[in-house]
Length: 263
Ligand code: NAI
Image (cartoon, rainbow, N blue to C red; front, side, top):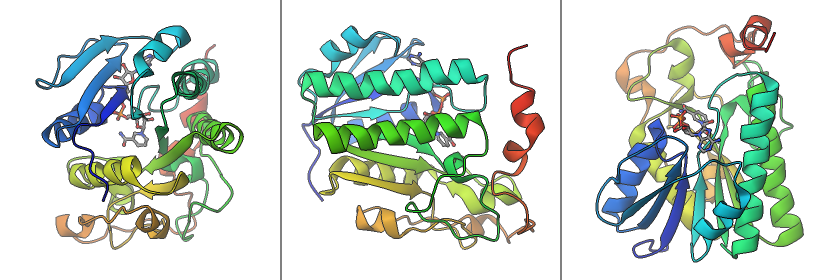
């Protein structure tokens, strides 16, 4: 694996669940970190500079990305919400990150996509990253758009982009669904390290642990160097999940979207 010690990476959404844990792990690997978020967050140690910023501010993103070896883009709305808000923060915000990377000459953007881009596939299906998207809500649509923007910036402008379809990031699996979708904190670090260092300049893969009952292929990740080591089965036997229901479970129901629409 390419060494990342001494390289400079900007992390958006740095104050969030994944951002906070990933920053600590990257700092241990001597990555030179620039952490940004709308919300305040303390540096995780020396070598971590915090710059508060709204993803709406394209010009400031260009300044922030200048001199960076890459950007890990975690910032945004992390669940179903009103479509107008998702469009503004997740779609326009991701456009700003990619466009700022292009203008600043930063070579790679790692995009935090989601398993919810394919949440309407059934639990009996085995899904890989080359299958058509079937989002389970407007949040999933915003991540499909983010992946499409990544693809555009790679194809048209030569920016390296890696879309990481994150499973369920939890310390331990807590439901029948998460037994299939779990991404352990340690495997999350493995997934992002692979995304930061893969020789493949443009790829998409599922960041899921090696769960015995997983729904998604690990092959795309393996090609990028992501080799998960954890399995939700270590936390107990598989619980039943109806194979004729969408993988998104509750997220895939009409009410889950309708309840979050602006009135
Ligand atoms: P989180 O909600 O804890 O963190 C997201 C961060 O983005 C927050 O700190 C928030 O302040 C920041 N943010 C929101 N709007 C912003 C704006 N306009 N400008 C700047 N910063 C803004 O989410 P989490 O769990 O850490 O997830 C990180 C990323 O991974 C998200 O993009 C999420 O959609 C994606 N993801 C997470 C999964 C999970 O299991 N946690 C599963 C699939 C995808």
